Image (spheres, helix red, strand yellow):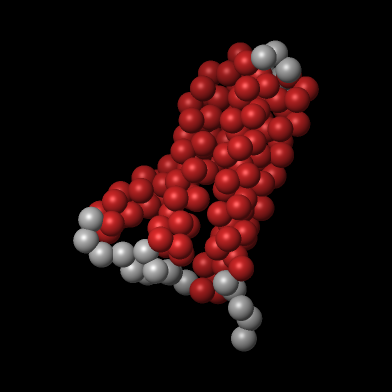
Length: 140
């Protein structure tokens, strides 16, 4: 039997890494450092893509993990989880469109969607770490 217990920390780390890269990439573009922005955002995309593959692999083998918190933590956890899950589904095509427009040098259209993609992608990355902490570290 394979031990899948390493996957949650790997997944949380990839989400945290994505969040840091997103903030850094955003700073680079606001400072006019286009080449750095591009490299960092492509790295954020890679980290998020690896996360998605790892997450799907883990849950295909482990299934659902039940939240063990009680009282006030349950509605808080499920509110965060629900918003995270819905936005995680929404963000995938948004990231692909945003990336595609940038790679095709359609920067006007890239900026138009990136102003929505950035905060949603950042929210999904950060709440991914929060869900991990609540599920595997705080309420155990």
